[in-house]
Amino acid sequence: MNRINQLFSDNPKNLLSIYFCAGDPTLDGTVEIIQTLEKNGVAMIEIGIPFSDPMADGIVIQNAATRALRNGMSLKLLFQQLQNIRETVKIPLLFMGYLNPIMQFGFEAFCQECVQCGIDGVIIPDLPFKDYQEQYRTIAEKYDIRIIMLITPETSEERILNIDANTDGLIYMVSSAATTGTQKDFNEQKQAYFRRINQMELRNPRMIGFGISNKATFDAACENASGGIIGSRFVTLLEEEPNAESAIKKLIQDLNE
Image (cartoon, rainbow, N blue to C red; front, side, top):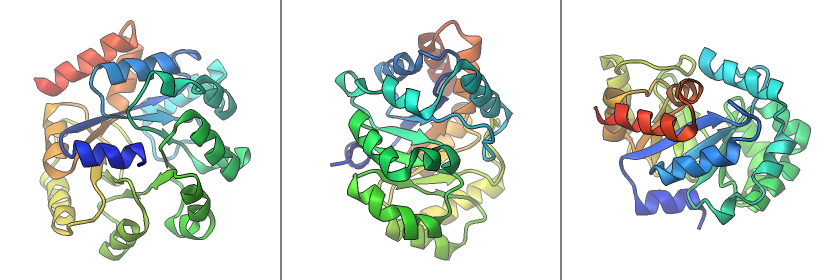
């Protein structure tokens, strides 16, 4: 069974998923960050593939991608760094990246390399669902790679049901139509969106991302989905704290206070 499906089968609630950008803050720190996150109870990890034009991301992750590229990170190097990651790490690992570098690598070659290093799924924010269905789904399924689709408050009910029926693993539920970033809490408009999706009783589990940074927002995500995805706040802590261990411990402390 794919590790993503196994995770939601075994632990369906209160899951913490963390995003960070490979190659930031240091070129060679990717594996250590992943190992540290798992050791500190993180349930799933999104490894960002740095790209020069990350249009769905806020300034924090944009800057992280810029630093990573300047450090020399590339998709080819990332695969090399992760070659032996499954010797020490058991939790689901996902890539989050834009279509351009994946297509330059070659989609089938990309999926093959994902299998080689144990990547379970991929989030591609700028991959249209129609293109996924027509061009990429068959290849991804051949290699048992979950392609995770995003929904937003503006996504139609028809489209959400179509995504739910034609994907597997999880649905990434974007808390707002804005870019990534942090916020103190979710307003009534967002809470109404969460309730609306809950009432649809979708087949796939959901994780809520964008804007989760503290106890209030993480608790709201856990109440309305299987858990929350934290990116910008952790990326900031990686810059501020002396190491990944300090960064994740500070984040977990913030989520509990």
